[in-house]
Length: 486
Image (cartoon, rainbow, N blue to C red; front, side):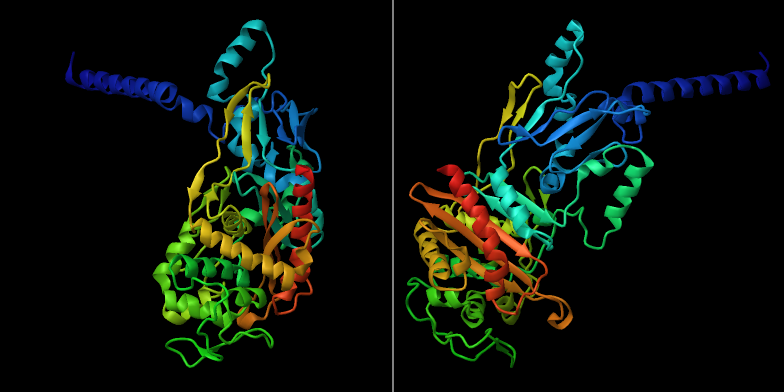
């Protein structure tokens, strides 16, 4: 063979070899990735080739599926009371994909999870059509309804937990949306999603998990916990050494209290009852940023939570001077918290100092309702001792019985709480956020801890606005849980 022909033969051989390598690379190495790639339309067609399994609350499904026509997708997702449950379910849309539980548990709901392999194989042999499994939640329908209806047409969120287990009982966010209006793949579905996506009130955002707000005076319970845990205060009824005015260290600026309240040398109990900025600001400054940060992080700050839906990390600043530490200790400066985080703080106090990991999926079920997985409650941390937790309970119960949280009282039930109003905007020009955190306690223990934030409304710039706007919502959620336990 002459030299030019040999070169051509070698070149053609290399081309054939490259094609073989490429074909094998795609067929074997990249097969799984391509088979499940979001751009592979066959994947989504197969996902909706049969009814999805359901998301369950109190033994009843809050989702469904219905047959569709004129499209490759045989079934689309439906929702019962979709607006109320959207912060829990998320959405499953043929057009835009899935979110939250619908996304995270998609394998179970579609029947494609590896744990269902034996079931799928058996169904294939018997000719039975593939089915999806179910996701059983920890949610309480009555608590969720109380939260959702309590928020009404105001922007805000509610998170409620069972302190003894960490089970999420309510997770409401308003304004909300109905996931069913864009569950399909038509132009109308696209228009509905676009409208929601562009809405300035952000109905698609899960405020209970994904929005961080300045917690205002509700954060003072955490500062009180730090004071007790680090031995700065041992007697909650002893006078503190808090002058009035109190000048923040390194500044000439006095820290102001809201209104004419008795804060000079106030006891820790009374300071929480009337919400003294000076007492808690000075406590934070005296403890210093490291001790305050240590306590905040034991409660879950500066760390994302997974329920399994991800919750944004709440923030307690790591770099502060003493004046900034004082402001952070009363829920201002750069301190920011999700409603879930503040429910966790309250839950740990109600649970005698033990913080349980929050979760909202209790079981995963196969199509035949056999249990695939059961969630076991897990301890997350012990941010304070039982003795100090019970001191804080006494203080929070005083807030409700004889302070700004009176709107949360429930006859025959012990309630502890803390109001808060968090200012925001340039020079505090925006309407404040109204907060209320609380727990209910019966003879059998504490079945519920709640955090409520209302973003707007006719809130005044004092803690009573938290008591006026948010406390009644918390009360209705607590009542719903307590009544279910009877």
